[in-house]
Image (cartoon, rainbow, N blue to C red):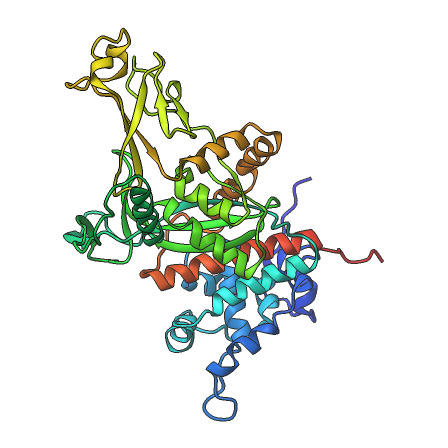
Length: 451
């Protein structure tokens, strides 16, 4: 039977509590049960005057409004306020009644500029939520899965200036230079003098957001972006994150990120990374920290038709290489980049039957470069064949890669509407905190008892 619903209910007056209209299993109810937001008052107490001035918007309400934006992937604070005005669950979450006026969308922005801009408030909120999950036994920081993802900056890729910039010194450069000179002296070579000349390069700097970095993935994907360097545990909880310009390579931030996780959470027993992190320094850094490196196989970089580097056997005792024909490649020198050079003798190579597949050198000399820390890379290769490393590396797609996928698809992290490293870092901390909070709430949810 065809029926029509009358519209008289629009003007009907009823006695109803806001709590009655929020579904019993709504995410905001789960969050309220999972964590008490009262800790925020202690974090911001020194940013407010306790007995003078006009009453402020409750700081817990401010932070909850931001969490609504990042929990539900709303594109801006302006749109978030519109959603809160009409959504009874959101009103319930921030503690506002049916007719209470919701704060203006600029309120959080003004508070950020005046109170929170140069503080670590959002980082403290992130770690407070993580510590709550750890207290409930949900986090397993014994293995850290580390990777980075690019987030499109709020900047036109066609509006930039070309500038000459100083190449940033690697964090371990001092340690490497010291070991290079020690190695040269052991082999009877003179140590290198200090390098006073600064290395420079030409870069593209956005005129809209100069702190972003120009990122080129392929011919089709060129943009200004930020890199979110992030670590997660085996259960998908985020352990920490650092934000840089999109031009900063992944491997340059691993030591800082691992140090941050060790300081704020716990020292991991193993770190799983992709091929971009497979460098001698990272292998050495992790092993020196007694952290097990979990790294993948990397294809040898060689010209087609030439002998593989693995076919030349390194003799650690005599410190030389042996070629497939049994000839010795003796130590020659150690370069400024930390590579030892091993060269063959031309009189033997000139008549060698493998010369065409060995080298293109005009003086019949085969040269092999071996990094001073190559032993650490070789140890990671041995570990790669163990069942534990294979199992841990296979979990990357279920952990850190899943974190990035969820962050971009569900929490609005595909691009940023903010500009500047500090503001984008705030977005990173709040987005990842929201993801941890959501997981914490869902995993600890205890539904209402049946009547």
